[in-house]
Length: 273
Image 1 (tube, rainbow, N blue to C red):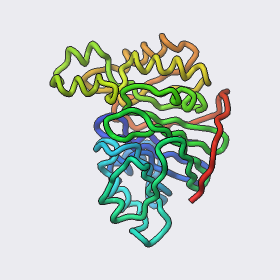
Image 2 (tube, rainbow, N blue to C red):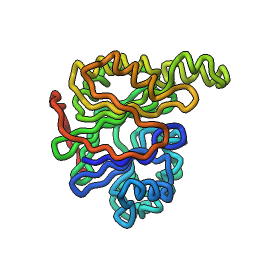
Image 3 (tube, rainbow, N blue to C red):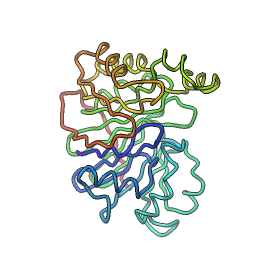
C-alpha cells in the first residue's frame, strides 16, 4: 500500500491511498491542480488515472473545501447517472455536493465500505464538526488516519492499534499555544474537548494504542505557530519508546509505504457498493 501525502495541516489536507490497482482520496482540502503538481513532484501522476473515490473526514474547509472541484476534475458521476464515488458519512451535510453528484452515505461508527481492493472502516471521534477516524485495509495491511479531535475515545486505541501505519494529529504544544498570538476564543476552542490534540494528549493516546499493537506512527497536522516537529516527536517518543515515531511537517508532500507489522487482527465487516 502506498499513501501519497499531498497535504497535511491547516493549509489543506489530502491523501491518495493506492493499492492493488485501486485509488482513493482521503479528505479534500487541496484542489486538483495543486494535487497533480505535488504528486508529480513525488514522482507520480494523478491524471489521467485519477481516483476511484473521495472520502472526506469532516466538513471543515482544510479537509473538505475542494471536494466539488476534485469531483469535477475526477469526473465523478452526476446525480442519478452512475455508481456513487463520493462517500460521505452520515454527519456530513455537503448539500451542494449531494445535490450535484452521486453520493453514498455510510454510518460514522463501526461502518465498513469497500471500493475495489480497499476496505474503509470508520469510527466517530470528538470534534466541533461531525468527524471520523478512518482505517484503510487492503492486501493484508492497514493504514489509520485520524486528525482534528479534542480527546480520545474508548474505541480509538484498539482501532488504531490494529493498523500497520498510523497518521495521527499532534497539533500544538500547550505552552506555545497559551503564549502565542491566537485570540482567547480560538485558544479555548483548540484546548477544549472538541478541539485538537496537544503533543501530550497525543502521547497519552499512543500509550494506549501501544497496548493493542505496534504501528509505525506519523505525527501530522502540526500547527505552524503553536508547535515544532522536535517538540511533537520528543513527547511521543518519551511516552512510547517501543513505537517508531516520525513527523510529517506542515504542508510537506511525502510518500508513505505501508508494510505489515505485528499487530492484533481487527474484526471487519464488508459492505460492497
